[in-house]
Length: 320
Image (cartoon, rainbow, N blue to C red; front, side):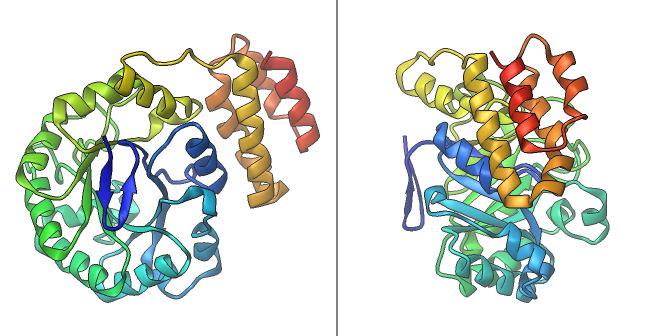
């Protein structure tokens, strides 16, 4: 089961969902090595991208081993979003993804992210402006609607398709729900039946069995896995195996988990530099360490780490 996005054929339907503070280049490369199909950056403000802010351009770094990878931007002004999309294309991304789903309050207050779901026509105008500005495929990430009583995803999907979108990814919760409660997968089915472009979906996918069941129950073209892959990027490989053969490979051993964690952290030290990587260390590492038997001991020790060499020793002591 493959998916066509413009001129790009995605080899299988298990994608990495964009997540702020998580889907950086080191994590994306690890996810690709462990079986993820389509990759995506974290969300970046279109205003910063359009003016080529240094931090924004840093977030828009990609490597050849990542392709196809989408660069995700958010905003409300069609011209600004179009200019930001041009930058995404210039930076070497295969796809530009538009965020109309983020439930963060500061974005909602600015009328961005999930706030736009109450105005499908505005989303259609933004998609059309971006599609006209770039030669790469344009996709969008949405939610079911502003709240459970107002489902607008089908209207949004149709407006986006008319504007030139190549695919739509539906997080099957409302903006008001954020990440609380079970996702309504039936909304993905309704969207898939109502548009002709590829539909991906996400929400409440925590295991390979969930990912495969999601595809079969919704009829979606793909599933984007977010929080379910944190600390467990093997979910992509296992989901693909389960989908294709009916049997997933064994879970990774502690040593294999430690090896992957070291690769990720070493990549973050190179990408961010030591001070920032150290600040991120506890959160990133504990996603992996929750799978080892002495998690509490690891969690207590991680805060004393001051350099990469000490972290390597800590991993060797706990992931064995």
